[in-house]
Length: 243
Image (cartoon, rainbow, N blue to C red; front, side, top):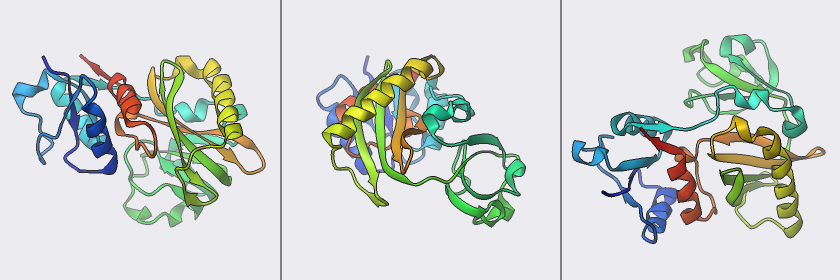
């Protein structure tokens, strides 16, 4: 029996890198067709999925997979000791009068996450479901942002992706890496039990405040940036549970 990972039919640099990484593994990465339908004869062999969140959820239902992720309100429950900013979670209608905040959808991308002067100025606000769930947070300035693929409470591979207001995947300095791992160790000691064993965590440096947790993302739909694709593949597989 094969160990198949269903890949989205959308070709991306990340999916291509994972496909290459799978050549040295026991996994077979397959793009079945553009209709997001895994043929019946392969469904029992699909042990994981990677792609856009909607695609992944459709395939998971077909192939009897549970896609692990944090609770929807998880980030708002993390102490400010680690977030370095106030984070709230609730229905969009609860925040319509807020000003000068960062706002992001908690599930699918109904609108682009970002800083807004007024919530009602979100592009296409009049078409949004006011019952949809969102996160809001204080506005901060991130000097550095780093993606970490985490398995069994350890960082398996990591990559920077943003530095000083520009896309940047260059390696961290020796001190940055040391400080990141020390911060992660303190954080995971307190929050390991609240997270799936396979998860993507983003950390960064807030100007004037230091290292902080940015957010958690499901491994099965997270971008790799310059992470080691072979190591990331192991985390992706472990983030999907065959039922």
